[in-house]
Amino acid sequence: MAEVIREVNAIPVEEQRKIIERNWPETLVKEKVEEEKRLPKLPNVESYERVVTRFSPNPDCAIHLGSARAIILCHEYARMYKGSFILRFEDTDPRLKRSALPFYDSIREDLAWLGCKPDEEFIQSDRIPIYYEHAEKLLKDGNAYVCTCNGEEFKKKLLAQQPCPCRNLPPKEHLERWQKMLDGTFKEGEAVVRVKTDLSHPNPAVRDWPALRIIDPKTHPHPRVGRKYRVWPLYNLACGVDDHLMGISHIIRGKEHLTNQVRQEFMYKHFGWRYPEAIHYGRMKIVGAFLSKSKIVAGMREGLFKGWDDPRLATFAALRRRGIQPEAIKRMIIDVGPKAQDVTLSWDNLYAYNRKIIDPTANRYFFVHEPMRLVVRGLEQGFVARLPLHPDHPEKGFRQIEVKPKENEVSFHVSRGDLKLFKKDNVVRLMELFNIKIEQAGRKGVEAVYHSHTYEDAKKLAAPLVHWLPEGFGVPCTVVMPDASEAKGIVEEGCKKLRINDVVQFERFGFVRIDAVDKGIVAYYAHR
RNA sequence: GCUCCGGUAGUAUAGUCCGGUUAAGUAUGACGGCCUCUCGAGCCGCCGACCCGGGUUCGAAUCCCGGCCGGAGCACCA
Image (tube, rainbow, N blue to C red; front, side):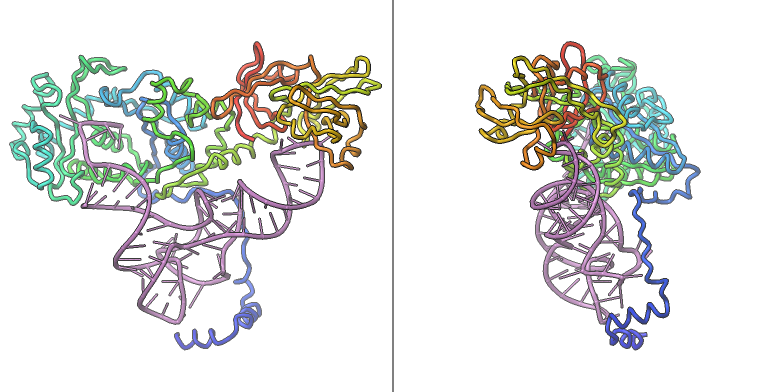
């Protein structure tokens, strides 16, 4: 073998190529398949009856782009394998991460908007008896115990790989203690159910983890079930039990849950269950966006944000309001995939996906930002501008703007931002109208004289193009920018006919979503 | 500190499992140009990466070891 290789290597590469071309040309054909990126296969699909995935948020906050990975991946995989996608509300902490009623609905709404409607929905606060049953079974079998040690002492023992005094008590004793948890003999903080794992496990976080604790229902009622329960399951018990009971085949979640898998596997062994396939993707950040729930909540509390859909936020509600299309988010997430690597996306990236979707359909309009007066003299006649609603799709129609001079003179609104183009003696073209020669320009306004009519004339002079509106034509418009600042200006009359949620392009300004059309127009800026 | 998980251009991704048709494809971005009565879209060009050091091998982004860097977890949170 080595000899053959040596022999081949002795031949120059060009010569090698020729030999191959002569004898095995088919091996040189490079299939050029450029298709949309697809998701990689899910592991071990064949050993499950059907693929079942779940998205399991705590309804304690509006969900945001950070959840997109979980939602879209879970939903997409369920569709790919004709399986099912479950929405499960994990609302078992009425104390620290207390859920609130409005979020159950807003999450459902967001999922529907994203096109990821669940096939089934569960709410953990409806399932407390199920968790109790399983806790009792664990207790009875000696696989869990009720620990009454105080936190400090327990931790010391744990770190020393020592059992606490409770651990080796007989199951009977623990069942009695369990009753005392339920009936109120034990108060909040006095007892906790722990699942036995391995005290010598290298990761102390895995050793005998807590499964249920007491929360005083008087001081911490649950928003849905009120004061019905005083013992609440912790994440690993509730989630672990549910994943098995709901037949989840593939768990897709962030890698912060990696050790939870290790913890839960001990419980699965106690029950004799098989742990589902688990995929842990990396953290996703967007430069400059608050993608942490705590920061969003803090900002809301301090009144920093106007609402859950404040344009500075990356909540789905905010993105929706800005005219970001769900399909753009979906495309982006699928391109990123389910890898364990952390990713830092940029807004530009999302915008590029979005632009591809909205550009072909968004109609064009003139929005004059920070209007400034432009007076044009020397007009011998009236003009009518015919502006295509979409330059690439003339079949969509036109809008017409009439310009009627009075005493050979017309006043326009132009954007203050274009002042840099209005320099004395420069020729500028008012788009689709005519060309003007600047006579004077300053902060107070611009004065110009009619120069010529055709676009070709402007082209010859390399005149810059600006958009415009005749004075007295148009309606006030406010564009809410991504930093929540407001860009004020005037848009064409025709925009009054737009409907809320329409996504249009304000030419030379950017894509916006129409947010309100009564008393002036309000739009939210998407991106350039 | 302990326990895990990762490191391909500015960003993201393909290739990594099963080493060689590829000194690395794609998208976005930057830059330059063309086109267009938008600073949008389209077209062309161009810029730009295998974390580092050893080892195995005829050959390593791909396998092994060490280091470095980044992230996550270490709650009676989810």
